Image (cartoon, rainbow over all chains, first blue to last red):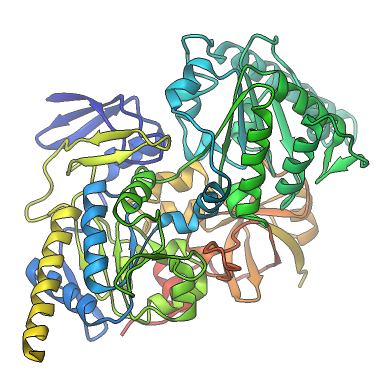
Length: 483
Length: 132
């Protein structure tokens, strides 16, 4: 039995690097320090594994050799006039680098999952910039933490524990005890209401409204946690202040806060369902903090307004810097989606939706982004790497994707792989293959190989290199024929 | 049959996250993703109980999922479905020039149904047909 420490978790953008993995006979038998999401990946990755290259013949996926699958994949890409290469956020930076080379070689479009998560955030950042920092600074110094339109309790379970309110910083204390005592008080209060509800009609129904009226602020010197969302999430249960916004009302609330911190008066009683007195109180807390951070999630980028919501949030942060230090950071989902953006930017100048069809990189989200290309029916072939667009894309885009020839490189038989023409199994990056990943604050971290992959299974990087070689061979042949 | 209009929010849940990377073809994934969380008052008005099937419809089509009483939604009129192939099969693809489809906060119609919740393979077959 061997215990490997300091393993990086290849799940979400937190990239926790304190994971301990217990290995026996090349099998992971236990994982320590990981959250439910990370643990489920480390413990369950081999259960639903695909280890056989597959190719579609007469409408059925049948087993084939790796060489045949790679050759067919290269043919699909080399014969296409506008192929889409999509995915990249669940693999290493090294694989993405080869993917970019392949996209240039076949004159296609390369897009990563940013396009359906924080794409609007990147557009807003390109418009107005971003005052940001590393998560270490936040852990040690932030005395006001705001989660807006995100639910780290579910999507980034250790974010609070490692980087914000529940972490023990050098200059800020963890708020564990406060939250625990509040939870005990809350559950006692709920029990009382439930008991009252049995006796007095409507007693229990009155609970939610009462609950949300209470703001239990800690002493001024202690770290505060604010959650703004459309529903009372589990993260909101931990918050000192929870503000519920009507769906689609984030832009209004952000602009109202901008007005309030400039001491302007609002001529309304409420903004998007939030009473103005509450916003005034929040504006006061924001202005009077010493180091504030606003984390935002898909609640801003996927709702009405999209990049304008994020732009308003960044401008609010910029305005707050006239009074205090305030920063902002997107809550990135996949463990290396930031890496996919970084590699794409250093190679092509653009972070996602890069079009090589003209022979040079072009970038115009809305035109060169995956959803638009598929919905318009422009792409005539596709390569999906470490992603599952059939599950995560909306209907019209998937309808076109499944019509065109496409290949999938993935360790599992995902819904996308079930609809593909070629399926190439790969090693799990961060478990069976090493590489580099970028944390959500743009800090690069090494992914470790903790167990050997099944026999004959290669890493994404190696598979892509082989496809690239094959594409060059096919193209060289057809060029020689023309000459 | 009663049919009501709701605002649909999609998003992550921890149960959805546990199976999303390596176990999408399992029953556990289906049980945690092919669901629609709803306020108790709305369930009463719609005449459904926890675990009943409902049909969620947009202009693009409809999908059958299971109703779950929400502990989180505090205002009637809003429903939540976790990210996944079930909800995405009825979502619009228009990006309004932003590259990003509109995936949160739009109107859907919901009605009770006796149709079963499709498993992942049936869903793909019904929605996108057979790959040739």
